[in-house]
Image (cartoon, rainbow, N blue to C red):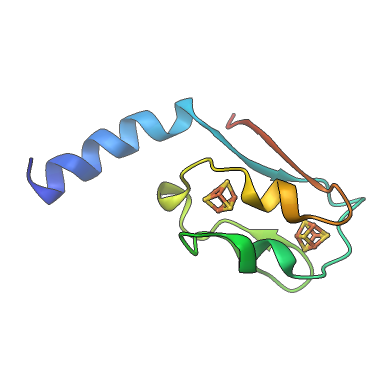
Length: 78
Ligand code: SF4
Ligand code: SF4
């Protein structure tokens, strides 16, 4: 499978997997979750984590497990 074809397949399917969603009211901005992410798809913004590379998320849930504030949950993308 060519790299371009693989990218198209991934892009068509990635909305059907769970991705991390941050509760802004609970997040303390500690920055632990990006450090736990094995694919570096999660990064800290000014105050909150965000997904600059969502296609690289493998839905492992490590970011939710490491969060001391229970501010991340896995959910289907809208
Ligand atoms: S679910 Fe896994 S791969 Fe996706 S953002 Fe969280 S730690 Fe990274
Ligand atoms: S680990 Fe939890 S509290 Fe810390 S930045 Fe990530 S979501 Fe926010």
